[in-house]
Image 1: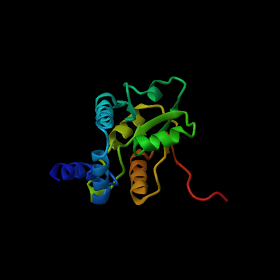
Image 2: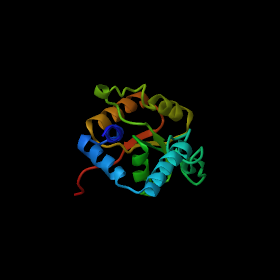
Image 3: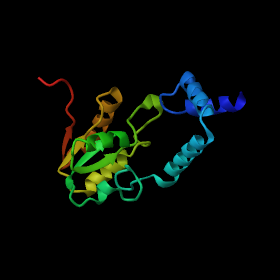
Length: 172
């Protein structure tokens, strides 16, 4: 069962996929007809070939810059900072009309995710060179999220932009 084990190893490298889930996925693939498998392979290749990251905000897109960064109706004085493109998509559903900066993760020294690994310096330069009146952090209130917000806030102290964050907790 060497090919099946090899396939399971690839699945196991994906986020949130353990050994048992990886094995289930490998057996699922094995049971699919060839035309389904061909379509699956084509879809993965199309994503890898056509999807890229916006050079301005680092969102996933089919063209650079992305639709959001090119939209002249956006409020260019608002900048929302998020950890990854999934967070950006969640904020976008709230009808937020500003721009974004996607960090590429959160600080986590135990996982070797340091400020140098993330797009923090690029964010600081973007803010120094831009005319933002408000920087809005839409980052989950985890230990890593709080550490990331505090680190960036310290770097931005004394700037002209107001620093705010997404509200969380139970409404009263």
